[in-house]
Length: 55
Image 1: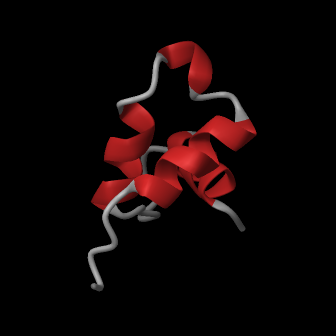
Image 2: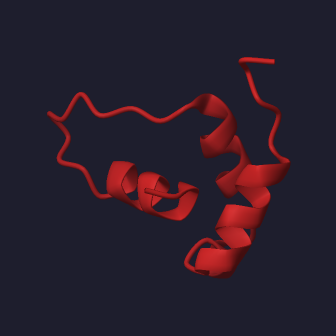
């Protein structure tokens, strides 16, 4: 599952779901223009540029 799929799975989850995503992924996607958040390639590129919290 890539960043685009992870973000949209989390975004569309029911309110009672415990599903989470890394804050870095959320921030990278939310910094995009709303119309770009639906573009697979744009979201994955933004996520790839996000800092890796495990480094």
